[in-house]
Image 1 (cartoon, rainbow, N blue to C red):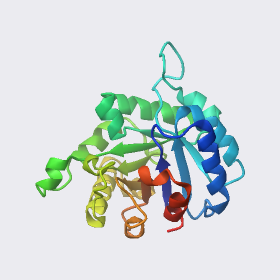
Image 2: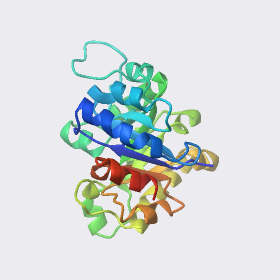
Image 3: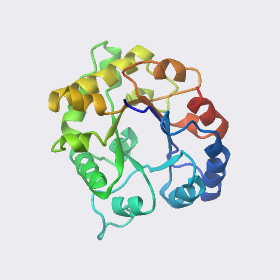
Image 4: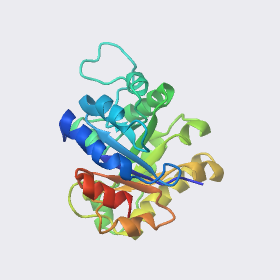
Length: 249
């Protein structure tokens, strides 16, 4: 049975002190990890302090990105092995902002997924469709192509350690969330694609999240859909009380 997950992605927000204060405010008010997995992805500079503050609680700390090499002459990049050895559990890869602003391709994301898995991290891989396809009323096909490319060469055991997040880029940071049926459609297509690539049993073991303008108003409907295993939350995860409302929806 897939344990649902609610993960917050802070992006480039919060100082180290603010990050630790946030963790201290929420860590004792979270559901047991066997009922709901909770994670917070903060800026790299804050991760070790966040991890230390969260010790003994159900909260897992995630990185927002990593490189596809463990070491080398890669100024400014973050080693997946160093993240793992620092106690970090998840890493977000392929977010639309990384693809758009930093020109990360599916080939790069594929390398990062493999490197993260080899280092012991559990990737949260973001996949999107386009506003044009959605406005045109067509089915979400782009997200299927993303899965085929991003997961290329992964074994069945590997893919079961990956969490996918369906994040339509027109819903990220816009306040315009996909309605539950649209969100469910994207998540369903991801699972069907994994089933096609591997088999039904493998697909049934992979967690698939929705992300994009998740709020306290729509969390309940999203989490009640059988095709959605949780949410990846942006702006609504920046306030500790709002994050707790989402987690305890």
